[in-house]
Image: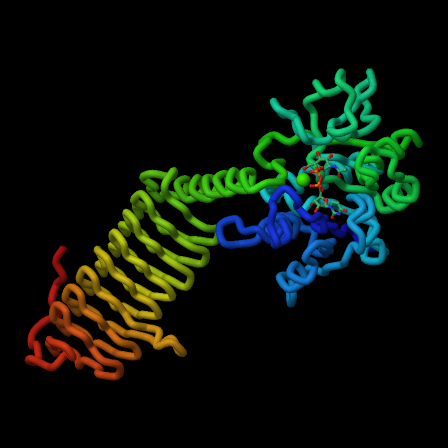
Length: 426
Ligand code: UD1
Ligand code: CA
């Protein structure tokens, strides 16, 4: 028998999002919210994952195409228990089933690991993740008997007044022994105001059969937030951003104003680099040590920056590699460029990297100096120690030789520069 499989529930319409896009594909820092869930599950050691899709299932399926994550379709959206039933075939042969809701993207690997450990060590039929909230409105509440044993989960809509005070809530993440799950699924009915099959009914059923229902309480209650509306989505983005930035700061990066800075997941930044306000750094960007980035810089995918570089205000870089000690300080756009060491890129320099059909590359050699307002039409190569005059336009393929000075529109060679590599100035 195989160990554990995860079933991620993501079929719901997400009515409160008021969107044509399935809720779980709404983006948090450049990635669909469900990818955070599948990521945390797989980092927690559960490698077999099945996602239950329904509303917009084609789009969810496309997103996972070519990955290890399987998808199944829940035909009619008649509740979370029915959603789990849609994955019945996939869970065959596993001893335990981890269930996670696709709209809880803040859940962490660490919490999932503790939940799984508790489930294994206690030998329970069902282990629930719970949290105690100041404002539990909207969540299912954990109901315990006088001895503290969990007897059921009462959904918000089904609560009678006196139970509304219960502040311990159901996060939605839980681990079932497969046998217990299958038994409970048979008995879950639709006896509730929504006429849906609630997975949370499994608690009442298992507990009534004297099967063990365990729980583990979550320490950081941010993690359990379920995203049902765009307001909650914005709150989740904010929490995720802060997590990412706190990790970077702990590793030796200064972020002057986290409130106006956005750093996506999977960004690496070396120590003693300073990020100034209003900067956006997207996934996959790598930045070395001792750099100054921003204010108002935008570093997009595929960008790599060496050590001691300065990227200033209103600079956008995409798929661009910048070597050590180079300065790009004001109002510049470089796309598909490779820039050497000790280069100075003047204010307003632009690479024309897209001709409407193709994207082409620009190379700028070590110790070159690009004057303000230069336009470099790609593909083009500027040699080492070259000097491009202010406002020059370098046409496609008009490569500039090492040490040459070019000026004008279109640029012409003025003279060859001789002597040592020039030092750049601020
Ligand atoms: C659910 C829980 C509630 C818990 C809360 C935590 C139930 C009955 N209630 O309430 O106890 O406190 O989450 O956030 O489970 N889904 C399907 N198919 C369906 C219905 C739902 O796949 O037919 C999926 C949704 O896509 C979603 C998840 O199940 O990912 C939960 O559904 P949702 O409607 O958001 O439940 P809540 O009312 O938030
Ligand atoms: Ca929800």
